[in-house]
Amino acid sequence: MNDTIAPQPLILTPMEARILGSLMEKELATADNYPLTLNSLTLACNQKSSREPVMNLSLAEVNHCVSELAERELARIDYGDRAQRISQRLRQALKIDRRAQAVLAVLMLRRPQTLNEIRIRTERMVAFEGMEEIQQILTRFMQRQPPLAMCLPRGAGQREDRYAHLLCGEPEIEVLAVETETPRRSPSVDPDRLEQLEARVATLERQVAELLDKISE
Image (cartoon, rainbow, N blue to C red; front, side, top):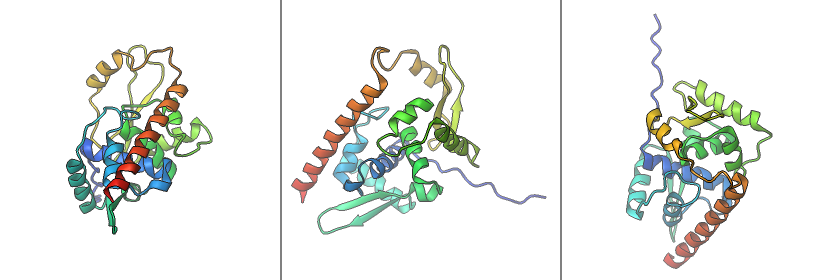
């Protein structure tokens, strides 16, 4: 008789996923400004670029959620003389490396992604050797018990597999199918060019956060 108890899945709310995903992204993409202050983290969560869906969280909401994540040892708060600094501990909790962290961050911050979309959107965080490496990471995610990600069934007109994280539970396939019926961007827009523009917007938002941090000191 096998008495082994299956590990319980780590379940996050959408707000918790947005906060942890933002911290994971900024740790790799803008390491010089990490850990983040509360102002910087709130702006990162509410970015108009590289976020699906866009959120409008308040400082109080983010602060409360960070405190709860810290109690679960998924985040850490360092109290300095001027401002508290917040870092993520999800990577350590899941026992994944920084390359897997980049892939998971993209999945947590956006709707389901294709391999090519993940490749493009992780470029500011890590440099992958090729699509095969990303596929291997996703395969490991799906083979974990409990799994961290899943491959979604292809909808009408879709030529590539899409992947979603499972930290907020399994996505509703019917809802995702409706969302993808209308293209999210014009086919004439180059994805690489769009990603560059989104990166510029993210840089501007980070600079605004830095200015707010200096003003509040």
